[in-house]
Image 1 (cartoon, rainbow, N blue to C red):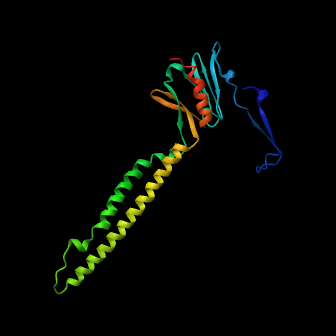
Image 2 (cartoon, one colour):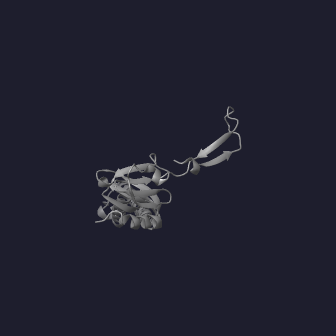
Image 3 (cartoon, helix red, strand yellow):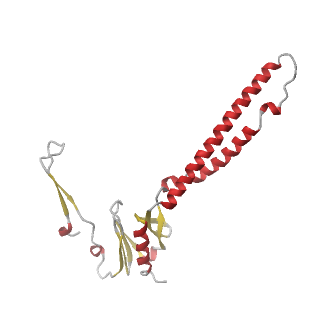
Length: 210
């Protein structure tokens, strides 16, 4: 890391810690890709992300993203199986979509069934003394089944619409990540925007000849 590229921010206000009289905040600049190369290592392609960068050399693939715990990661070229641009917008909720679709189908089917079938139509109340209590119970069951059917239908519709919104947002979102697939190892993600990611992927394609 080059000292000449370090950006220094002056903090003129005093901190809440009474032991600190004044402070200088030092924020280093992004590492230069050339500083991360090994002796004799030749860079083949360098692409800039927003933020970060990826460098392909004759030995390895180096990826830098400032928000990662390990900002710069080195992967031998033989371990990289593919590089993809993957959608990431709304991904946290995407895993709930299959369950939401199943609930929607089950809720709509159960709700329509409860609304279509009436307990009073399935049972015949005998015309006998004391049958009024049975009729009251059947009417209560009919009211409860209709209420439950209505709740199931409306909740199924709402959850189904929510699933559609999540999928639509995932498909239309500009939030993507340039992902280095590493076989059985965990992939390395470099979040960026769609335009930058696709431009970087086109540039990296030439660095990996068939």
